[in-house]
Image: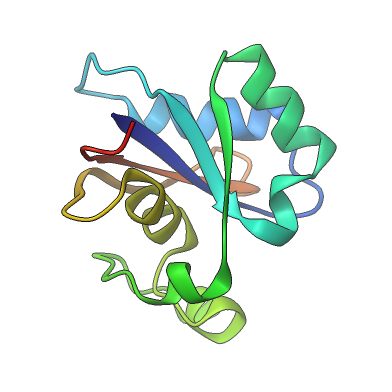
Length: 124
C-alpha cells in the first residue's frame, strides 16, 4: 500500500494538494492508494474533494500516532505546531502502518500551501 501524507494550510486549494502530490511523485511511477492527514484536517472540504478527485481513500491520523513517527524532515514550524518534524511524512508513515518506509520525503507545493510525502507499507 502506498500512502500520500499531507500537511496543508487553511487557505490551501485542491490545486495546492495536487501540486504537492505531483512534486512528491517525481521520479516514481507509483500511485498512492490513500491520502492521510491529521484528524482535525481530515474533514476539511478541500482535503475530501482532493481525495475524491484522485480516487484516494482519506485517512485521519490521531495526534499521538503522528508524533510517534520518525521523520526525515525536521521543520521548526511543524515541530512547534504538531510535535513532529513533518506532518506529511508522519501522516504517510502512520497510515501505511508498522514497518512502513518513506519512499518520497516531504515536498512543498509551488504556492507553499501544502506538503506531501509518500510512504509504502503492508497495511491494506
